[in-house]
Picture 1: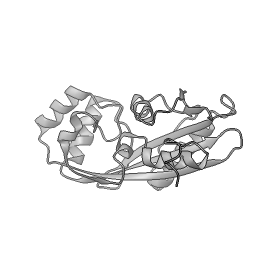
Picture 2: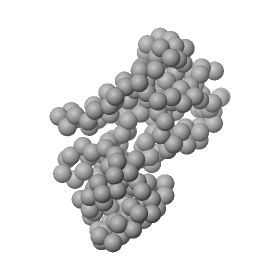
Picture 3: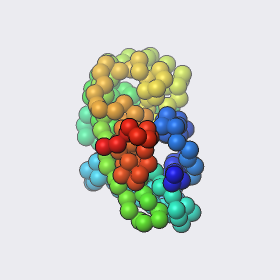
Picture 4: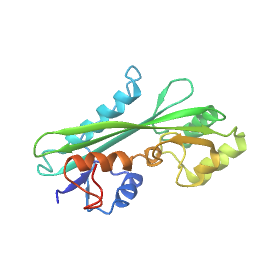
Length: 199
């Protein structure tokens, strides 16, 4: 089987990829991402995911390299990334309270041997409950979601912030859409369930 490389050091993406039961290597991408508000979010995350994967071509010349990137677009149409600080996480959640927001996760599988890349995007919508200042402060203090787009961890206590979630694949929200990834890997001959996981 082809060697798989995850171009991300995100513990959340690593945990998700382990669900597929495939061996893989992990490496930080050699690509500096920038948030360009003038680019449509679906195009932005596809661009970033593809460049992250391709950036490791020389290091892993025979591998299939998986790149991913995520942003969320708030109810006002602003593209936002990770808050990086607790104060910004509180601010983001305050602005998100009682509204619906869309997460865009770009995914790319890059064949380093041939240079072929398949890149797509998966979306997921969340609607937050109307949150009090106390609830927001308590949540941020307990989970410290500074490294998460949207300032919450849906796989943890963040689920308590939600009123509604809508989408085809909840793993999109965590940062690595596994349904889409399974489809892209099949194109390159990697079957998650040999004999029964074809198109």
